[in-house]
Image (cartoon, rainbow, N blue to C red; front, side, top):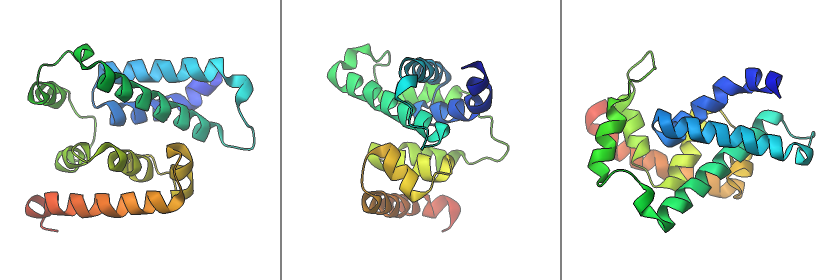
Length: 162
């Protein structure tokens, strides 16, 4: 398992950071993903890529986290969305270029659109792989990406002169 962590760990953590938007939750998701992968290693289908299998586990663990928040929102330590956003915005970006407006706009998308955008654009998954990870048909991913681009274009037109 150590060799897999070395190979896939950095990219997996990047996905966790993109999904969670803060380092603390990203580390939790990262560790939960590796734990689940270890526990279910016997279920790995070698006809699929290991990275794709790991990514699907990560996205599913993240969805579980979102469900828990909806069921028990008092576990959320922040009293308002603005307070959470303020803390998230204080986390330093590790990107070379400043795409903060784009990331902010993506973070404001409805979750099903945000997941599709993250997997397709930020994690470089193709449409088919994105559909497999999300557990939806290819056409649904295409529709979600189209709608996400439309929403992003509306939000960013003033700032990016699109």
